[in-house]
Amino acid sequence: MLTADLVRVKNYKGKITPRWIDPEDPDLLEKAQSLVDVFQSDAATKSDIDDAVESLIAGGTDFLIWRGFAKLLLDRSEFEIASEHDPVEIRRALFEATRGQAVEDDEARLTVLKQVGAQFGISPDEVATSMYADLEERLQLTDFRKITATKLLHRYNLALAQACLYKANSMEVSIRETRSARLRYLFQNLKFFGLMHTVSKDGKTLNIHIDGPTSQFSMSRKYGLGLAKFLPAVVHMKQWSVEADLDWVKGKTHQMALSHEDNLTSHYRVRGQWIPEEQTWFEERFSKKYPDWELEQFADVVDLDRGNVMVPTYRLTSPLGEVAYIEIIGFWRKDYLDRRLEWLAKTDEPLILVVAEKLKTGREKLADMPPEVVFYKSSILPDRIIEAAQNLFG
Image (tube, helix red, strand yellow):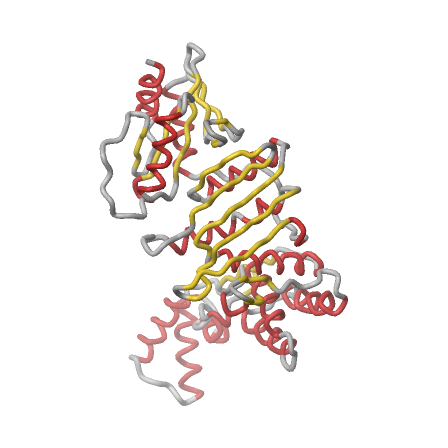
């Protein structure tokens, strides 16, 4: 994602509009390709790449775009220490060999390098290059996830929108989508990032209200990043719109509107989302301890009341065929949980709320919870879920 210093927007009368680039602009495509070539060079160090990027940017008038491209390419790169021996251990050996004294004479320096090299079974030259191999500028580029110039330009536009959403106080997402695979992918991402949300239905349109991070959050940075990372899943929908309130200037809210008409392109494929470790553990333990019960991942829309809907995490079926839905709640505040409890009181759907204690973001004390609410600290306990289900089934 782009950092705040690389964001290019228009700010007019309280409305933020990202300054998109044209993914088919021949000049931008040429510039993007020149940067991609830098990252695809052999045996490049971080310093080599930084120097090459600076050389390309020098004298340009659109340096923010250049640096944005470079940031996105760096995000696709992996650097490692280019030394078989730990630089810290080598420096420690050199310090001990010189007793902490500076060695300025070339002959004395070579003697020390030979002495330390003999300890590690390497040449004096290798000692000299390895001693600072862990410095950032000397790290070696070991992996680069290839990308075409055209895809880099599309990625830039999406990253620009994501950087703006990082400052969102709230988001309103509307989608017109009937394909269950895409809906399932969308809500899997919504839950994976632990975003606090409510969903309502208006005909064929689903409206998703997403709360944003607030000053109460102890993990606001992580939550804000999840808010931005959710956008690529929305972009996969055919017809969609996003309206966001942004904390753009401290103490003053700005608005930003996005839609499918902006022609943003997602760089992710529609596929199964990675499952959090605590859910994987829960699924494994549940199937072993309660083989007669069926626990299945579930991401279809369930109607509640007055146009409200929910998309549960799991559907649980008892040996007698009784069905209950399980919703796992990530980040939450008391007011958010209270809204979920109102659902429990009004709906006829058998619903179990599973709430992560560690992701509570406020300090308000909770009143007694109904048995359909199950809290967990690090692991979701199957026994607690069965107990809540049996209470629902009577």
